[in-house]
Each structure stands twice: as structure tokens, then as C-alpha cells.
Length: 431
View (cartoon, one colour):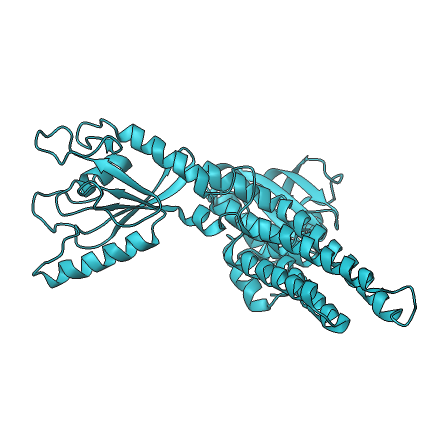
């Protein structure tokens, strides 16, 4: 992957379509436009031009052309867009003509965004937010990813970095003038207090739920003994026959996981094997073990068994199921009564899940930190705490330096090629 190359790719949906947008980025982007049209249009103004093959002058298409001189572009370099008619042959013809030009090649996955990162147009956090935005399937995911991609977290981390640089500068000044009479213990204490204040601000951000819950969905496990109505309830919640329903005990032997969204919040509903103390079926025993593991990892548990006999879980919801059946398992007044067959109470259960989900996920207009970001922020906070309690100014200075390195890795100032390859590999061609 050579950043000196000029790259191109289809950046809109796969043809056929009404319009197909081909992006060109790099030092020869404008040369390519001249070769196709004979001249450059005014910058940042859509111009209707005929595109011709420079080899034989044959007409390729009549399209809208836009050019954006770097560095004030999405990629930080000269950028051009061809808004073509969206037929397969048109797109194929234009791409083949571009590929034949010297110095041009097809872009790799995520290469446009990687160039934006390399040229300082976005930082690593914004790039990760953009990847999540492209993958968002619910409104809650979209809003959180848009905040991250828009730089909300980057601005916060840059503010922390500036405070950290200020504390380091103050400490270096105290060390340099430590022989002077006007440098006292209270000066070092002031720096220590500043470290603790910054530590507390970062720990406050870490107290918010993680991005993994938002991306993968809140895990809701349906649990109970055999034939308690778990699979029927799962089918009612997802409005399709996702699980086999039978009167035979032990029908569900493995975990059945169904992603779904309620109220713009992502959930992962998990049907489990019926829980019972003994079973002569080795396969069913494995299913019971997996069910117990799923319950331990769950964000919420819907318990369809006997009242008060459910697992010890902080978010357990008692379900009185099969209320359409006369001899159903009745529960106390605190249980949610429903019938998966008639639909009675199902909408109330969904409302309850959404209400609980709002408490477990970051606020919709905030951002969520992924595992990488949380790890580096935790490291930063730890170094700050060590600095605050250090007795030796030189040790304090080293702890502050380590904290700066962790923040630099957070924004991508210090990063590895393997990590960048993994991130930008998540993007599609043309982004």
C-alpha cells in the first residue's frame, strides 16, 4: 500500500443504481480528470462533462464532476468525484479506463479513511467511530457512533492531554528550580492535586457502559425448566418461528441466539435448554451447562420457572407465562403475566426491556468506549494516580510521561501497523 499512489473506487452502492459515485484521491487525481474531460472544472462546484477514453476518444458517459483541492479534503489530498449513470457497464468502463492510467490503482478496503488518518484529517478514535457508524443497525448505535466519528471523544481526550502537558511542564519547572528558596512542598502538592483531578475526570468517563454492549446488543437470556414456554416466548418476541416448540421436554438443547432491536436498542435474545437437576441425556446435560454459562454472562434474565426459584442475578425479571392455559404456573403479583400464544403482555415485556436497556447503555447523545480505548484510558488513570502519590519528583515525571504515551496511543499518535491494518480492514472498498 503506497500512499504516493493515486487510488480510485466506487464509493456508492453496487450497480445498477440511479447514480454511481467514483472517488479518486491522490497526487494524480486532477490529471485523471483532465484526461477524461479535457480540462478541470471549478473547485467544489458540480460541472456536467462528457467523459471520454483518452486512448481512442470513445464516449464513456456524461457525468457530474467535482474536484476538491487538498489538503482541505476528506483524505487530506487532492480528491475528485465522478457522479456517473449507475449502470454496470458504465461503471466498469470508467474504472477500466482509470486503471489503465499511469500512477492510478484500485483502492484497498478502508484506504480512503486510512489516508484521512495518515494526513491528520481524523484521529484513531474518529476512524473507529466511523467504522461503527457504517456498521450501525439501530438508532442507538447510529447516534453513539456519530458522536464518536464527529470527534466528541477526541476533543475530550485532547483536553486531557493538554492538562497533562501542563502538569508535566509545571513539574519540570519545579525540578529545574528545585535549588531555589521559593520552591516548596506546596508547589509539588498542587501538581499532585492536579494529577488526582485529571485521574477522577478520566475515571468518570470509564464508569460509562462499554461500546461492546452497544455494538453486540444487550444479552437477554430466557431461562426456566423444560416446557416452561421459553421457545414460544422467544418466537413471540422476534415475531417469527426462530425456535422449535414442542411438548417434549428437552427439545431445546443448545443456545439459540437471535439479534433484535426494540425502541432503537439492540438486544441479543438467547433461548436456553430447560434447567433441571438430573437428565439421562448427555447432550441435554451439555445444553444445561451452556444455559448456566449464558445466565452468568447475561445483562438480563427472563425467568419462567417457579416463583423465587430463579438464578441469583441483579436484573432478573419474573415471567408468569402461559396465562391462556388454566393450569399454568401462577406467580406472585410482582411477576409479569403474559401469553406468548395470544400476545397478551408481550408488548409490556418489550417496554420493560427497553426501559432497562436505557439504563445499561450509554446515553443516546453520548459516545461509548471500546475495549482498546478503555484499556488505554485505564492505563492513563493508573499512571496519574501513581504520579499523584509519588514522593520523588523524578518518579512523578516518569509516571506523567507514561500517561502521555497512553493518551498518544489512544488518539493514534503512537500506534502499530498491525492494529491499523485490523481497523481499516473493517471498512468497505471506497471508504
